[in-house]
Amino acid sequence: MKTRNKGQTLGADTVCVHGGISEDKHTGAVSIPIYQSSTYRQLEMGKNQGYDYGRSGNPTREALEALIADLEEGTDGFAFASGLAAITTVLMLFKSGDKIIMGQDIYGGTFRILTKIYNNFNINCIIVDTSDLSAIKEALAKDKSIKSIIMESPANPLLKITDIKAVAEIAKANNVLTIVDNTFMSPYLQKPLNLGVDIVIHSATKYLGGHSDVIAGLVAVKNKDLAEKVKFYQNAAGTILEPFDSWLLIRGIKTLSVRMDRHLQNAAFLADFLKNLTEVSKINYPGLKEFNGYEINKKQSKGAGAVISFEFDDKAKINLNEFFKNLHIIAFAESLGGVESLICHPATMTHASIPQEARTKMGITNNLVRFSVGIETKEDLADDLMQAIKKARV
Ligand SMILES: Cc1ncc(COP(=O)(O)O)c(C=O)c1O
Image 1 (cartoon, helix red, strand yellow):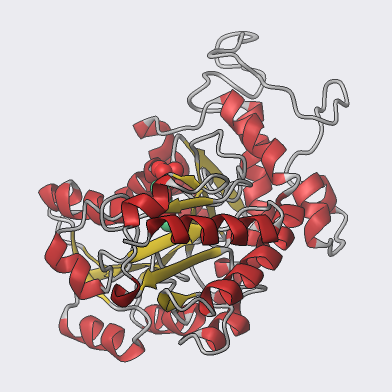
Image 2: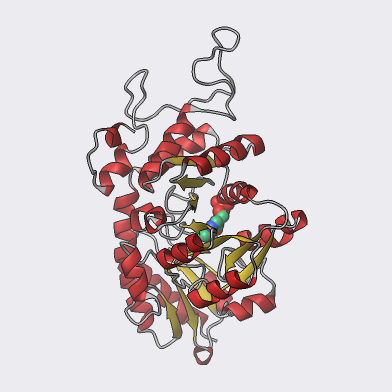
C-alpha cells in the first residue's frame, strides 16, 4: 500500500479512505475501477500482464484485499463471496482428525458448517465458553488433537466478551491456531491480529459494507505461510468475491470510521434508554459498566460496538410479534451493521439452526431480541421502540 510504504503511522480515518490500493495505477482515478473481466490477454506463452484468470486475480478485488490487510494491520487480505465462504475456506486449513474449539455463542452458520458439513470430513468441534480461560485450558489438556480455537468477542447474540489476548497466549503455548470472527466490531474498533490472533474473519456484509447492499466476507492474516495457504484455498475452491461487490465494499469502507462513531453514540444512548424501561428485564451491551466483560472489552477494543440484545420481562406481557410488526423505522430483519437499524428474534431467525436444547443452554431465550443500532436520529429510534411496545401489550 502506498501510504504504508511511506513508513508513516496513519490515523484510522485515513486508512479507511486511502488504505489498500486507493487509486487506479493506469488512470489515477481516485475510485478504483471495477475490472469486470473474467480473463486477461497474455503477451506470449508463459508471459501474462500480472493476471491470467479472474478467479485467480482481479485488480478490484486485490485493492479490497490490500485494504482489509491495512485495516487489520496484517500482511495479507482475502475477499470472499460471503462471510460463510470466508469461514468455509479458512476451515480448509484443517484435516481429518483435527478438532476445533468453537466459542459457545458462535454465529449459527459457523456452528452449522462445522457440525453438519466438516464433521463429515472428520473435522469436529468442541463447544467451549471462550470467556472462561480455565475451560479452554482444560479442553486443550484433555485433547491433543485440538488444532484451533474459533471465537467471537463480542459474541452473537448475548455479546459475551472473551479476553482475546489471553486466549491467543494460551493457544500459542499449545501450538494451536486462533481465529477471531471480528464482524461485530470491525477493524475500526478491534484489531485481533495485534492481540496475537492468527486469522481474522469478517462477514463484510455487516459494518464493513455498511449499507445492507452486499454479501461478502474478508480475511486478514499476519503470516506469509498462512497467507499462501488461504490464497491457495480461495483460488482452488473458487470462493472469491466478484469485482462489483469488491468495489461496493471499498466504497462502503471509506466511511467506516464516521459510521462507526455514530453507531457507537446511538448504541450508548439506546442501551441507556432500554435499561430504564420497566418492560425490559435484561440488557446485554458491553458498553454498560455493569455488563460482565465491560473491562476486558474496554482493554481490547476502542468501543463496545452497536449491537444490543435485551429480554422483555414476562410480567410486561409483550406480544413479540406485535412488537416487531409495529416498528416503523427499525426494520424487522436478519443481519446487522447497516446504516439502518435492524431488529431480530435470534431464537427463530439468526440462531434457528442451533437445536433448541443447545440454544437454551447458551441463554438464547424466546424473549431475547437483538437490536443492531443504525445511524438514524437516536431519539427517533427510542420513540419507535416505545410506540411499538405500547401497541404490543396484551
Ligand atoms: C458474526 C457473523 N459471522 C459470519 C456471518 C456470515 O456472514 P455472511 O452472511 O456474510 O455469509 C454472520 C452473518 O450474520 C455473522 O453475524
